[in-house]
Image (cartoon, rainbow, N blue to C red; front, side, top):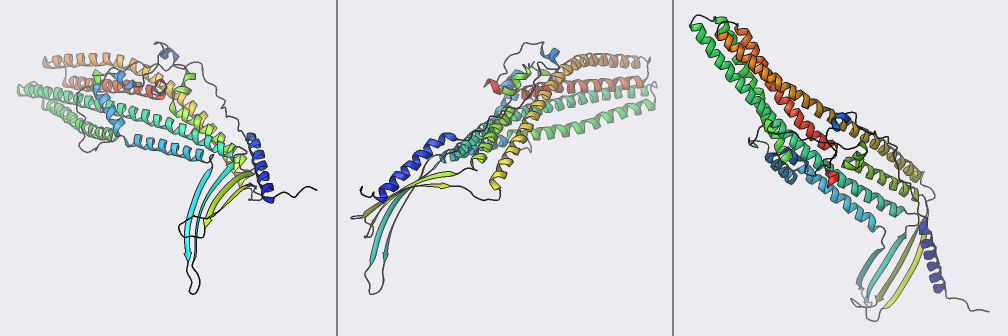
Length: 468
């Protein structure tokens, strides 16, 4: 008859068997298929005629240098160094990286140690002293891939945060460029208004001289005086807009807005809008960081669904421990040791359907992300197509408006000459003055529209991010 086996030995081999079975089943992790959003990308842009005039070329990561504005480059460098929005986005990247490390740590064993000494005193009895030290290790076997799915979700969200940082960076650069161009446009329009005022005041002097000679009437003096006052009134709102635009630019740079003045080293008309080619519509998905961020969040949602499904299944945990104790104070000499090894299986029997509802919730969240991603792609396509149309239209309008300004100036010169000769009335001169002022002001706004259209084109195709 075989001798009975030691219970401790039996427990040891049973634990080893449980561990082996758990590790063998760990390959049965639940996988969620990668979500593929069905999208129909157009073969060409609606404004393809405008886009096809220039060959497609990669966009530089420092695309703002194409405007050949040293002051703009200085402002953007300052914004990249001082923007609170950019620093905030960078901290979100750090937080996502920390969350990834926390998720990854759950795949590793947990180790803890403890030690203590005690002495018990009682009257008329001997003193009892003891010292203990223990070490324990715990590890959850990721049988169904729940922990791995959580790590995969955190990794995808970390990638998304990096794409978000690039989106904030592109948005910041575009905002600085557009605001700076608006400031230059306001200054140009103010200078036009001042030149128009000077012309009106010069004409008022002529009318007053003609009245002293008995050629002009008091009515004509009054009419020209009114024109001068109107021109002076037009200066105030332009000056206010310059101050407000300057303070908005200061905020983008991370500066104190009160009293900020970037200086006037260049004029609006000195800047030439660069030609920007958008490439094929299909390349947009890889060139825009906001779309890549949406893709990463979809991948995180897939992992979240897998983790929620795995949470419905049993969990297996392993634990091991060892310790030593001694009947002495702060001393382990002559102590006795102990060791343990255990495996546990846990399964939720009733939770009111909470875990099943969690699976449905994560699936619904994924569906929201799918719809959001598809909508974002469609919006991106429209933005590029609109930017193409704006760039082409504004260029043609500016070319035509330059002809309008030239003719308006010629008309004013002729009207003043005819008025001095007595061949025409003052009303003709006043009308020519208003026409020239309006034409010059419109030209400045069209040049601003061309510059901002170029900035918008760079922004909507990803700001050169894919070229980094």
